[in-house]
Every structure is written in structure tokens, then in C-alpha cells.
Length: 289
Image (tube, rainbow, N blue to C red; front, side):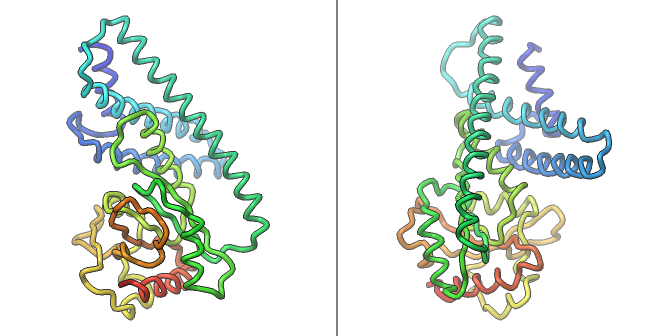
């Protein structure tokens, strides 16, 4: 077994996956581990104990394993001839440098963008509700989305809509960076309503991100048509439950390029946020064709 094969085997062991795991299994496992380690890191920081350093180290190992697995999968599909040991060595570490630079650029841009947005938002007044558009919706215009949603609740001050683009397939280091950014966004930011494509809806339901719809107060009274409900199942569920509603043709997407994807709305709001969340969801469903 050469050095690269050993690194690959270790990467799968770090993620706790078999070496024949699919890309979807790798992505789902990565999200779960990142969420768990960041939660442990936060607890360690709050308690000011010595476990904080190991949590950070674990995060680094998880990130390296994730990038290595997806990077090698792309390499395997290449038709170029295999390199010698020296060429392989430099190729391997060149990838790491490129990935590090890309991630640093993303982090720098994200921090600057976040500061700029906070300064701008401070001038706009309080936010009544936050929604997230997440998935293969690269060209979706969030300003139009906010205006369309606010038309449904004209007595509200503001609705914040954010876009998190997630590539359909991971084909490059940039795609890996986008995938990692989406995971960090899910962990650090919790909006009340999420509009997703089917692939990401199915994946995030499995990861226990959303509420079962029948647990929400007043949901039964909405009388959502059965063919609009979208079901899923977590590891804790004994059967499939309704976690989302298909709102693909809703007028709230008028003037917005949704890339031909089916759009499913799901609820992630905290209990104290349910009244306004249900108010907006009710208005959206009233306009559903």
C-alpha cells in the first residue's frame, strides 16, 4: 500500500465510513461530524476547560479527510497517466495548498461580507423573519425574494432572505469550498424557513435539521393537499413524516431564476419563533396554485 492509499484509508477511518462509501454518504457524514465537533468545541469554550484544543484538532482532521476523499475521487476519473512518486508527492501537496488558499479567500470574503451586511442591516430596522434559499439556485435574486415575501405580510417591517448555493455535483476544489461553506452556514445560522431543492431537502431531513410539520401548532388547519407534502425519515424516526411542502409554482418566485428545480419549504424555527413563521407559511400556502 503506497502513501496515498494509506492517507485515503485513514481519511475514511476519520469520517467513520467504509472505503466504498458514496459521495452522498461522505457529505452527510461530514455535516454530522462538523455539527458534533463544533458543539463540543462550544461547550469546551463555555466551560473554559482543556478539551477545547482537541475539538479544534478534530475539526482540522475532519476537514482534511473530507477534502482528501472528494479530491481523490475527482483524480480517479482523470484520463491522464499516473505520475511517479515524486510527481505524485508534489501533486498531492499542491492540492492542499490550493484548497487552503481557496478556503482562506472564502473566509475573508465571508467575514467582510458579513460585516458590510450587518452595518447595512442596522440602518434598516428589526427583522421580522429570516428565510434561507439553499441548493442549486445560483442565480436566485434575494432582493426580489424579500419584496415578494413582504407583500404577503405588509404590516411587517422586514424579511431577510439569504442564498446559499450548493453545487449539484462536487467536481472541483471550489465546489468543495462551497459545500463546506454551506455546512458552516447551517451550523452557525438558523433561519426560520428554508426553501430547498429536493436533493438538499432529503439530505438535511436525514440530518434532523427540520421540524415535523404535524408538530407545528395550527398546521393541520392549513389543510395542505397530500400531493404537496414531502416526506423524509431521520435515524430516530420509525417511519416517514411530512417535513416539507412543494411550493415550486408559488408567486413568491416571480421574477426569480430557480434553475428549473422543484422548491420545497421546510421549517427550522425555534418554538418562540413559530407564531410569525406559521403566519408567513400560511400566507405562502394561500397563494400556492
